Image (cartoon, rainbow, N blue to C red; front, top):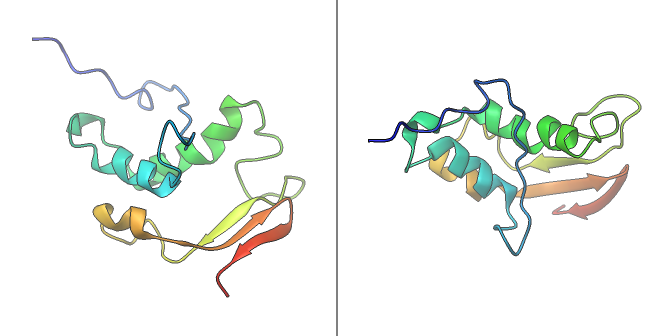
Length: 114
């Protein structure tokens, strides 16, 4: 019986999360939910914090944009999303149901439910 693959995050490898539609579902929160729930290889489940990092800081690092994207800091692009709920506080299988209330790209609001 072959050993299960190791979790690359515990090996110090940066892994980018993404939603390259149409290859993957457009909703990045579904990808985060799947990384946390991980049915087929439960030993590879990530924490919500690890999954969020994959879609923010580590994705920016993997595209060599960590100096301008991936976190909310002075001097970086103002790209951010305000969610309807905190992914750290909802049940795992409800993470994908969280909606984007406000989306800001380069400091400009491009979507608002209000």
